[in-house]
Length: 299
Ligand code: AMP
Image (cartoon, rainbow, N blue to C red; front, top):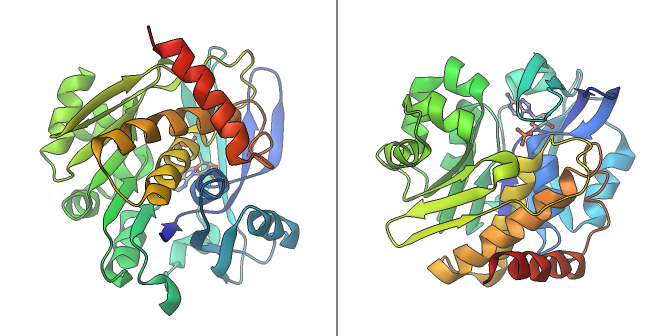
């Protein structure tokens, strides 16, 4: 099965109470691809500037990612700066520099237009829609977004929500999108906007999946030390979609298991800055934590 992702490749500056780290490799599509690449080959469409290090693309290729759809544009790569509170429960965006992403007009290589599984990773809904237009018959399309786009491009986002099968949001984004404080009500309201499934991520409190044929909830995998939660949502989506696409179906049982794989992938992400702790992880590693997580949630 083919899995295509479009999103950002970035250099982030991460501020935690312990330290400030510049130029950390990130971006929504980066985290997603490294996680999903443990399950099956991933096709990536994104844009980078002339400052993007060749070694960072080579790392993606080592994780089974086809980077032939990555455009190299004149200018600097997307940059984002985020600051975390001491308990990790809140995050402030200090700065977003769109750079080459501002004029990104995604062109999906012909060989990738037939992808059956499509992940529209966090990016402008205008760019996401342009990508979706080019994929001929996707079987399962999942969308991610962020507060910036909910605030700046709400009409475009609402239009796009009517065209996708599922959406992944964190608690804050779901509340911002729907105006509902209660998360179950917010999830119901998101389903009313078009998608058949919604995945709500609640950080250290886990995640739940809701749709007409499935309702499933999971705690987070208990990691002993959080270093940087950046990208945990994208990584969750990578584990989820990677497993679903590798199985080639969206039966409720597949989606439930995919929630465990998403949770496991995200648990590695938070253990180091950027993709540091995800790099080199194989399906074997994921399976080990999958079994542990199963042991924790099964009576
Ligand atoms: P997450 O922690 O899952 O929300 O993902 C954070 C990653 O998304 C970082 O690596 C950022 O570079 C990237 N990012 C931050 N803001 C945006 C945005 N507005 N659009 C796309 N990607 C973004």
